[in-house]
Image (tube, rainbow, N blue to C red; front, side):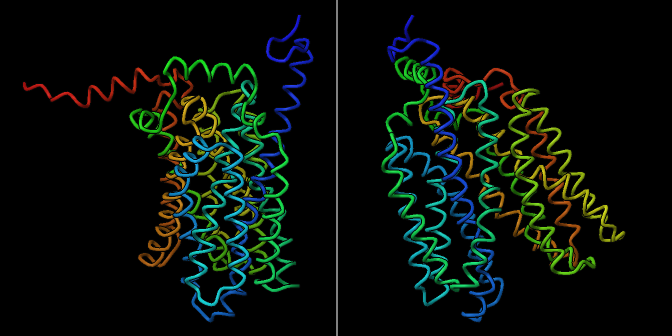
Length: 439
């Protein structure tokens, strides 16, 4: 018996599809790691740039805040570009913009130019080659093991940070920050040249059975659009999860090193703990995707958010106890769960809004991540100025985690129940357009 689409025996056809799926996953993993590694490397440039421009720290950290806001704004735009113009053009434009921004950043003469290039240009590039297009492509190739595949991609973001940080630090020491930006820019443009030789039509097509289902949805007029998704409660629940999760994460991470130093730890040890938190997040991110395949997204969310709240409590207790046991508890509980919600949201978005403008919808969901990150980092600083301590920021982090957990527990689409249909979206639209009946 032969497979209709390929003419190969069914077993051979399945083996070929599995190999192609693994190839796509590898490609997405590598490029996502590059995106995160280059995008998050700004922290290493902080002190060299401060010394050259003789500016205050707030002005420099504002570049990263601008990056986060721009990343959130760009996510739905990048998703729409991917859906309308295809994977090859999306990745190519993203790498070209990212590489060009790095090369131009090496030539700046004023700080505002870094806001434009590293903040805005970096966000445009990172959004178009990062988790957004990767999750869409992987969802076209994986079905039963989709959560695990999403976990691998999400973990690659941490791997990128872990691998690129020492490389960038070494380059800065040898070539200066300007020379390092040149190297990063040339590397991104080299990747741009290499990906032109990939079989993009085959990559974008997806596994035959998944592609057939998507084609049938389009033929039946059942394809999702961003406007239709906006009329469903599950979309806003996913948006809220990303918003609350980012508030919870950045309310702690931005001031973590300063808090540890003020709690009595040596600066080098405090910085090492910060790096360790990022490293263990790789393990948690991968495990979250793998566990979701076995016990479901909601149970993983309960474990994840519960661990985050417990980790924040351990960190708060450090201020009075100075016990390294509290630091270890924080690293294990907060650190491992730091990136675990990303693959859950990616899977739930792909599952609830399969087909159609899926990437644009996921991009709109990720807009909540940028806004939450900006609020969490700014809010923790404002609470520190208001109270003179860090406990207000810790409370904000715990509240963000609790709200994210509440959404998973209460919204059916996040609990593994029936995904919304276009009929649901149309019914909500019609209901909202009817005038209220007088009593």
